[in-house]
Length: 256
Image (cartoon, rainbow, N blue to C red; front, side, top):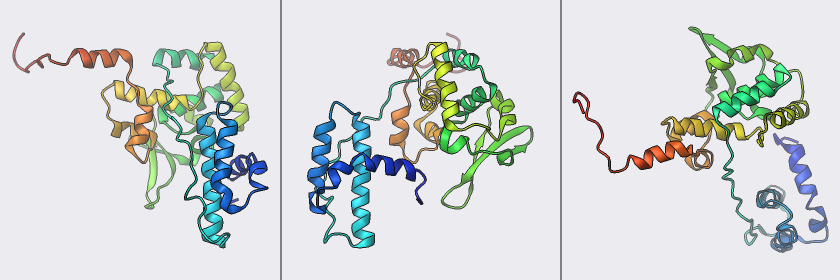
């Protein structure tokens, strides 16, 4: 119950019940191997990896915190590595078409803020309230919470979405917003998930000359490896970079 996503964790572990129930703790590696074999091709590798990682964490917790078993039986447990590099993003013209496809202004505001703020829409943006907005010198910042070192985490609000702040607090739940998202993407002719808006922001940053450090700061990543999964150069920008290899850089102050 103390976990942020405790309900979802319980649901994922419940899918393993038929494998766990008849097994002893020392059979944990075999349970994982059997589940992986039975569901390979049926479930995404990422889903299998997540569920087995939760099982691994649960068995370790039971041993270390409650003394279940005489050792950590997850030492031989194999968890498949997911490929998280989802190569899906939208460009600004496509996003503008998407914004126009929303029939509800509150839903439009939420997902515009997801893109321009780089926030996770369920856990970071939906809980925001008017008192989280900070204004100074004509600029607006959004308070997301406190970091581990006790300092407030603030996100600058892009001028394009200042008007969206009036919708705080959001008055609907995540299911309602997801339904509005599905309607809008279908109308706009785009196959996107809400999370792809973060990919889109990362690609926009890199294609405008930003670094992986910039992507990490915008998306609030803890490591560059996480940022690398998100940052895809636009093909035109990549071509421009490659075509420039071997060419002399123009010298300032001299005419060509």
